[in-house]
Image (cartoon, rainbow, N blue to C red; front, top):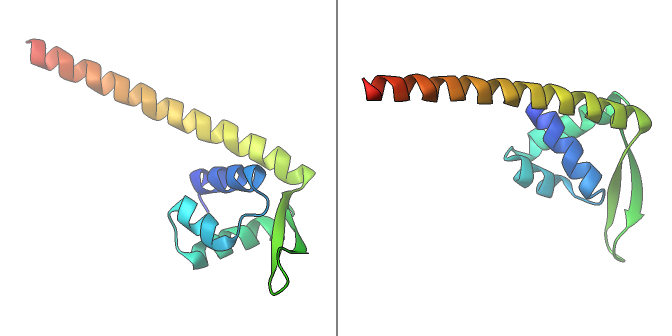
Length: 105
């Protein structure tokens, strides 16, 4: 799982612990299988825990909760994600400046 997917997954779980896997998949822009795989990876490493609850009489769902380790991991992933995006931004600014210079000549 790449940093961007992990960052978005943490963010979605933190904002809506009752989100289901279909909604996660839709928000992440991935298949349901990949959303399940990514979520299971976070559960396996101890960053997310689940709690079963009944949201109506016929069906039960899960709450996804960030553990203290998950909160630390989210902070670390957020910093990595931000650094990568800032680097991409700086490279894009340089490329735009170069293109403007070429156009002005």
